[in-house]
Length: 395
Image (cartoon, rainbow, N blue to C red; front, side, top):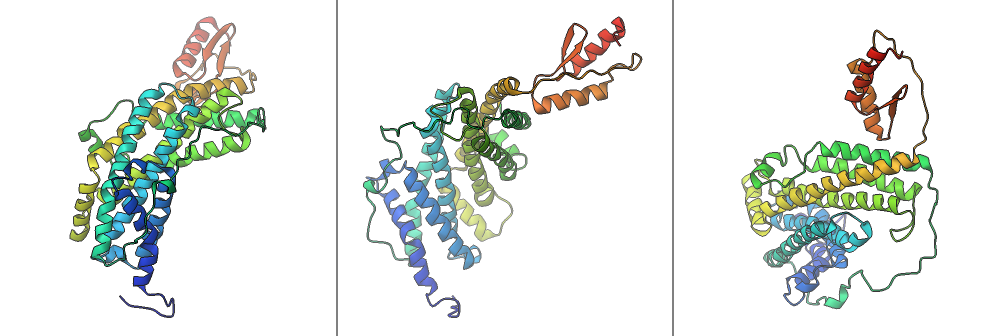
């Protein structure tokens, strides 16, 4: 490899040793059978995420994507990063589950544990391969070792005193209405994807990545993340333990959805970029085959669709009901009186437009004709009102 002393006096070989040192120590820790009971740890995942990303960036800068000797080692670092990101988000969900106050959470917890176990076992399976590949590339293997004590869990049996009361802190109705309305809109758009029931593998391969892909999931992830940020900034600043239960329950729904979409985004990215056959050159195909032996593609996609996206859909649907309730409790109500020409009545196109606007914002809007009341979010109700009007001649 060419050396450019004008840029840096440290050689590529020496920098490889520096940038792999801690990364390989974590891999050795994971590979140790005596330590594998302690692999379910957010501190470990955080360390793996940072060291693997730094190594991946270093290797990419030096052209590892186009080098036969280094390409597989580079792909392994990418695998560690995405698996660790998935583990971190799933562990976060499991840790916070009781605070989310979700309905029917027991089955969700069971499925989440299955997903978490798959991600952890994939890391355990890939770690010794990384060490062997490092030896093949003549990368020095660190002699020092981590111990179980280096990776304590985040949970303890104690809680800090609750001495900052965020009850009614800046709970402007305008912000609550906006957030609830946006949640309803996101839920409606996601529901169109149709993850009401689990998919079999044949069906999964027909929708991934042509219909369901990283780009589509990232779009929803960003929308939910923006919603969560707005909530924490303008509605309730504190945690889940105290305060307005309805608002914090709604926060639990879009927090769970956000972290699920994080996991799905990582798994779809890894599948599309590193496992999906997209007509690459022979060397890339060989590396894909080697990775697929380490990370089961079928299980990866099953967990992506039948856990991640399935429960995203379920929580958006359930949370949507709560959002509608919160919206109607905080919305400012008013009355607009308009006249309708008797001969024209309620035509289908303007009726559809009115219904769509009401559905988009999610609030309860009624169309009143004398003593009769109709649901303004329903085209049929509006048409029914028009029919009654033509008979009774209200206008």
